[in-house]
Image (cartoon, rainbow over all chains, first blue to last red; front, side):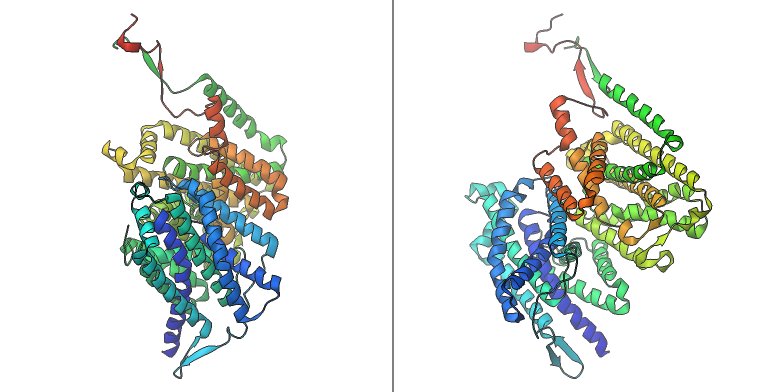
Length: 292
Length: 342
């Protein structure tokens, strides 16, 4: 009995990480209807960036990793803004094909560059002792400090995104451009700039998620597509356009996988996919749709 | 106006010449097993399967407007069904190919019901999830070797030269059939409906086209072709594993070939497959850098040459081999200002 509760709790913690995977994807879906098939690869790229910065400065321990993580965020923003302005803006339009092909091409380029530079060995970001520490709840249950922190960060990020979209001028600009690009431009918004800001912000979220993934587990250059699928499934299960929805979707996915892994290690990911497909069959609009 | 004479052009001298040359090439190709080397036949088998798969992706994305990243689901399924039928059910492997392709097409019908709930970019990634479900399912199926895969043992009794020749002829016929069927399909009424849907779903529905049925038809045909490609590829390869059969690289290469050659043209995948074959021959030793190059090339072509290399040349030089359009030719100059000359 307790072991099942434990499985459930670990699944929720895993779901917290998946929710972070989903945030950047959800933002780009929401503002630009852009399907970035390289989403997972950018996440892994961020983890590798953290890894190389840490080794370049010869730093160790969780504090150094956290400092590097924070230092990466502005870089990620600039990178995302530049990518959107220079490459992705040219692919937007009614036809989804150009953006799909370009991001798919980027995915292949990133995976193979990373393999060339870092080989295909799995790496991890140093967290010192933090990986071992856990919080004991009662006699039967314990939760790792790191997974718990990731879960809390996920809640904070989702709340921040919801606030940003609902309450700030930037969020209003995002929503307006998403609803009607031409009308927003007539009101004085520069859509290309707004899109750049959205992708910049999405890449900040990608960097957060990627470095946390690197702290929690290992990563290797070809892990990206699996992460993309998890992020995508969370967004669709939750319902398009809703950050809390994606969070709920990620938790459902995490717990299903956790239970699946417990039943049979070979089928964990498969169970997650099946929940997604069942959702498509029974409630294609997702749990909390807010289609804009 | 009533004296205006016109005709609808559906072929040109160039297209007839090229078709003749193509048929001649295929006829000469048939004799390859008597004078060629077996490594050539193997190489042809591989590139031909890539080509068939890419053509099917082109039909789906370039004509049907359904961009999928999950077509490897049907390629792998075709390969696995061929292997299961031959190894476990005692069917002759060559006979198993059409059967497995038909079963693959059947499987595509229920799968489409899920996939079609998503549109555009969501459809693309949704199909990828479905392909991953296929991969994981076969990776957990002990009877076909699980994650490490298995070999096609049913061919062991067949003499090597017979096996190679028959595989080659089947592959060649599949290539010819792919081109011919796409060509005649696109020239047919259904083909016209498909292209109308790609241009505007709403407008074509208002003209009485049953959009759902046409899309389902194209999706199933495309799965059938992918199933043929998979069955033939793993017949030539003699070994299958879930990671090879359901690899997303299949679709990556198909996208590369179609985008380089030209999306939504029959010639596109042919040109793309030839370029891909040449690049593969000379640069595949560079491994990761070669793949980086392919990725960059796909990006640049998509951003700069939006119609692909073939489309670019076609637009510049007016070349056409496979005419699927109907072009109107006036036999006399169009009367200006409403005045007729006779």
